[in-house]
Length: 111
Image 1 (cartoon, rainbow, N blue to C red):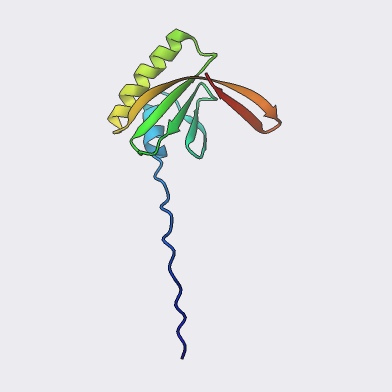
Image 2 (cartoon, rainbow, N blue to C red):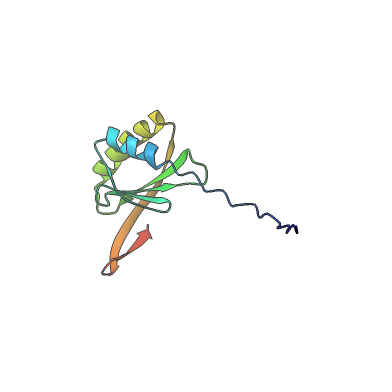
């Protein structure tokens, strides 16, 4: 009987993304996840984006440029509190704009 030796490759760890915790924080604010793609979470038909960071407990909030300053401030305050209750640390990343590129493609510009 022959034995073949194969050098085992160390598998890349799958990054932990706290989507459930972010969804809970959004629900606490009366909001919901519209769509999640890789490390981005689209909130309530793109009123905001949340970027999940390398450290699972850190998230960054971006608010749509079409949102008023008053609405943006209120959203940031509510989400900061709700995120903290979920063990997350939310920081503000600024604003973003969405542009339709093709039929099913969007271009996100962070401003």
